[in-house]
Each structure stands twice: as structure tokens, then as C-alpha cells.
Length: 101
Image (cartoon, rainbow, N blue to C red):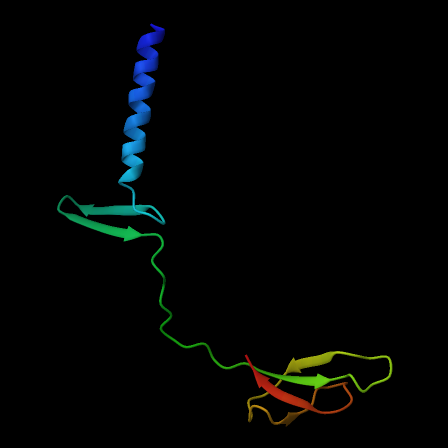
């Protein structure tokens, strides 16, 4: 009985290994059946294309290295304008540079 169990287990493992070799690399496939003759195959790793480009986002960056006790940079959202131009942030001394990301 133990010999029969070991043989069945080894056959099961060899079948599952050979079935794993036929799977697509990088993901599994989903198959949807709408009607008996219609089969639609989809892959999960298909990249989704964005139809609209992302809008520009503007930020004003003020350098605080000249202030006493302060260092680094302060940034705030800004209205659209000429990138590289001067801009201001509320409650911050000085002017900054308009950047986009």
C-alpha cells in the first residue's frame, strides 16, 4: 500500500512539474468563455496604456540657506508660469524658482 502511494505521489509531482513548464513566464493567463464558440484570453501582466498625458504640475522652491537658523529648501504649489522664473510662497521670506514635475 505504501509503495502504491509513493508511485502515485511521484506521478502527480511529475505531471504538475510538466504542467508548470507550459505556463507563460511572468504571470498567469485568464480565459473567459462567453459562449461555447467564443474564447477571450487575457494576460494579467499586460501594461495598461494611458490615453491622456498627465498635466504639468508646478512648484515654487525657495532656498532658505541664507536665513539664520534655517537651512534647506521650502516648496509650495504654484500656478502655471515660465519654468525657471521667479515665484513666491506664502509665509516664506524671499523668492524662489518655478519648477515642474
